[in-house]
Length: 527
Image 1 (spheres, rainbow, N blue to C red):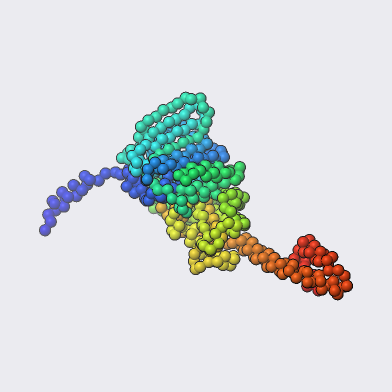
Image 2: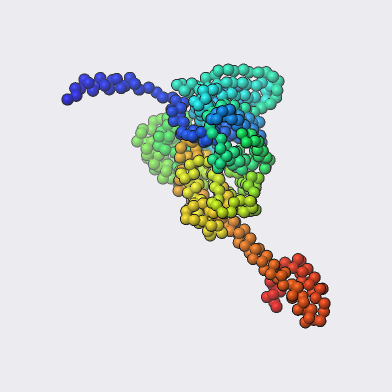
């Protein structure tokens, strides 16, 4: 029989082992959550995070991006990765925190479309570099003020704080602006559909206004700019009452500067006016003029339920920045050698109070492979999704679409077969990824519905092209048959009219060239 004193003593000993774990230490042990679960994917993830940062910075400063990416192989499994851009740069004192502290950034708090959302990307790459090679990351930046910041840094994982090994602020008088990041990592370079090269190609498709130079172990590849216009800047919006959870509402009530519940509703949320605010308070049985901080737990619960019952306008959509059909087409035409292209941007929709827009594009024919499954390009906020395709709402929507009705071959619920590339882009203030590695979109019914509608629109455009192409081929065959028998027809007509066949032959040939098969068919019908 176990004595009570033994149980108490054991619990006390166990309590001494408890300690707080920093977010850096957590991801150091769980790097697979950030996309570093194998060497090939790790190399692509590092390049992805650094390039995404460069594109975000350039777009925020309204600068047409110019990005250099360099991947050099040092040993069998060690690579030097360098990215450089022409963006606005980072001010000197901000560099250590931006690059050397996880969950540090400005995007997490804003409801506006952006590539980064968690403040983990670049600092996660720094963490992976020091974890696999033990070497610091070099960061060089200038904001165009004639000064250049130079840092060599790592991350103190116990404290989740930057560890500065070397720092220089050089007043060289050079008025350049941009950011250069260089690190050595463990990786594997393979050119396939989930490689670094494929990522850079897809980023060039989804960002046709960017000029990118990639230099890897197998040589240099240039991705020229296909457009000189940036998408519009998304605007930050306030949360929508239908898109928040109860816990978030309670935290907002505690931290608000509004003096009354009514002003809290109208000031801290989007699409809530005075009338709708009063209706919510009335439905919840709460005095609209009392202080939000005086609400009890029961009051906040009633308010939360009332907010979801009252009909409100959808949240504003100027927080989104879709590519638009023109840029979608330019991106596809720039990098894919096909004969037909089509694109569509769906009207904005909402899931759980969060606005989003689905864009679909398709490329067909040309130099695309004929006898294999087509390619699917998945994007979220202009970022390629190379992995976890089977878990993604985009893949499920594409494979569930009946492509046979649009003129393509399809075996069961799979990608269409033939010379086709399907592209789907989701633009949202908050993309519901299935994991921290941000490689697959969660399967919300509203999202899947919008993707299917977009695919059906581009599918119909493709159907018109394929049916027109088949009709043209049939007309060509009929024309060839007609041309084959022209000499005999000319000879027969010559005998009937007692004239030489040569002038008749010339006239028949001239009729084919000038009038085309439509008029020939019409004449045949009249005859």
